[in-house]
Image 1 (cartoon, helix red, strand yellow):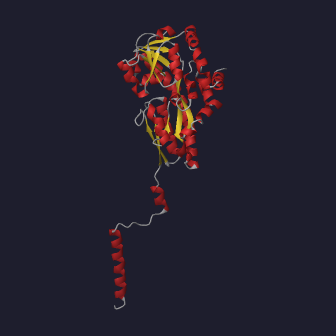
Image 2 (cartoon, one colour):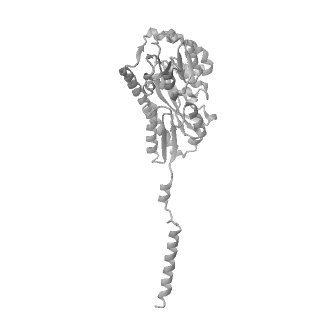
Image 3 (cartoon, helix red, strand yellow):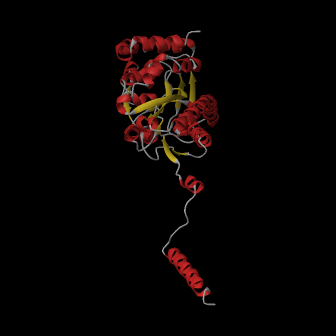
Amino acid sequence: MFRKKPIALALSAVLVLALTLVGCGAKPATTSADKKEDVKPIIVKFAHVVTPDTPKGQAALKFKELAEKKTNGKVKVEVYPSSQLYGDKEELEACQAGNVQIIAPSVTKLVGLNPKFQYTDLPFLFPDNAAVYKFFASASMKGLMNSLDKYNLQGLAVWPNGFKQFTNNKRPLVTPADFKGLKFRTQAGKVLEAQFKALGAGSATIAFGETYAALQQGTVDGQENTFNNIDTQKYQETQKYLTVTNHGRIDYMIIVNKSFWAGLEPDIRKALDESMAEATKYAVEQAELLDQKSMDNLKKAGKMQFTELTPAQMGVFQETMKPVYTQFESVLGKDLIDEAIKSGKK
């Protein structure tokens, strides 16, 4: 009996200590498995200005799906469509600052960083989609993608949207003379200004997200865009006439914050590069599929009068716009223009 008392006292002391630790919020030692569960995923914000049902919107969601799967959840991609975070003017600065990690601006939006990006606005540069895709894989395009270092930006891929068509609310556009006196919304760029000047029309730079209102309010008479953008932005509600010209392109450069991308662990970056490559293939498929679908939608809706030009009528437009090439050859570079033209030769 005498010897059991110290043991009982010792046990009581241990019990008191345990209860004290619990009361003070002490936690059991964490295991390596616990630590692994506590690791937060890398957040990648992907911002763009179009709706989710566009080729770019669909490809962005595909990239999210692939990136999260290939990294086993180590990366979480947050997609912000429809200018939810930033508009045309702000997204480049936001990406440079690292406020978003990926953006997908229209190639034309990059003219302030490198004027050679205006190649995409040269009228009638590419005869078909095959020529465009061939140019995407060219040395000239790779040079453009790598020309943004001083802005802390890096081009990763180019996603197609499609060829541009003219719309307006005044009259059918059958000849260059029909453009005289009309004012069109454009993206920023001297080539676009020269294009409309050659047609005898005026132009105004207006952000994509503000274009519908500008058309509705009569700030401008018309605009140029792909079938899919015209359809998904509901421009048919404000525009009576559409002329099928395929005169220019709207394509997107997928751009990342260079410091962020370079700072990723090699295995993570490899997985994201693979995801981007697969998403790009998907973007090509969606661009062709959705642009055709939108053209059909617009025709069936019957709100716009379609004008499809004959080869002779198209030739008049091409001849009218030739001076634009001469004017910008020194800016874009003859080698780049020649490579783009070569892409269209069979």
